[in-house]
Length: 276
Image (tube, rainbow, N blue to C red):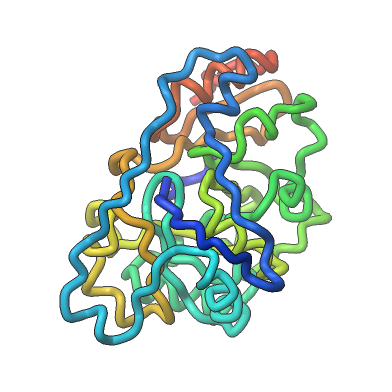
């Protein structure tokens, strides 16, 4: 089943000297470094900018926070309380909430002015978490670890064992899953104990956001906005690949890492699904 285009989503993380009690230590592992270990042909590692957006008077509302470990637990608590937060990922800024909270998911649709027929992806903290929400037994060993964390959304069947609420993307048997190469959102996902529903932080149909200034008019609808600086990967978003068929792959959206993604898929003996 084709999965409609999912729009969700390298942020600069400023790591404090002292660890936050109760929250896992944030550590950055580059998607491109990971791919070099696999021997794939990848461009040099991107350099992260520490440039911040000019947030103006809106920051006086107390909504904006730096996307640092100091504020990770605050974000976790907001998500657990059914609120929507805006967070950086490794591609774009996104709105995130508890994927198992129907009220919070509806709130994201309202903020974006998004049609309820357009599905949301989910974000989990670690690759090993994916099997809790989607069926992965048909995939070649090591494939997901080669693709993720990184700027890729994998579309998989939910399967009977998925703990996702049926109210998320009702009627759709597949789910798009992200593990961004961005420690802040991964810490939040881990701390939530669930999965995060994730979509791009913008009004539906408008350009995606690479800086919190891009969606400043929507700040008031979020519990918190976490500033990770200007994201350097452009507005293409993640590469979306359908992996629901045994031995097949289909690129649903080229995104920012199509070439690298296809190389990894073919290294694992998957063939492109050319069916209409």
